Image (cartoon, rainbow, N blue to C red; front, side, top):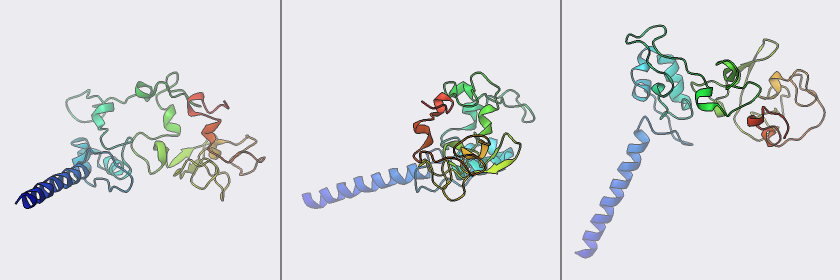
Length: 205
């Protein structure tokens, strides 16, 4: 009897744990982990905002949104008008949350859109909310794949097989190393931020 009772208790605990795990995975506000399928219903994740901003919300559900679907629209956008329409929500400045992040464009000192040259706040297939395309200083638009932090590697800071297409390279028309022309002198191949940290404006340490 004790063995049977113990088995039933153990099974009950196991089922409860399984249900808890399944419940967390199905929670539209749960952060997306590696290998976990994101929620596909934008309204379930982002609520009433997704009714009008459906395409934007749909893209966010497939990419994890602003780092996680747990970050909701209302965290950044303050309601200004009772009726939906132009100007009914505030447009936040990146520096409100990222004041210490200084790079080529300093959000604390510059205009609200400067971070958006390289980043998008509404989800991206790339790491670190890097834009799928970046407008270069020459005015062209360069498609970006940023999937790893290896350094000189495909889908990283500098491309190994398509020089000039890495996220750092596409804007660098006049640098000696890793420029948009795909030329330049030999240089280090490990992650660029090792010597060029984001917090120092990518200047060498």
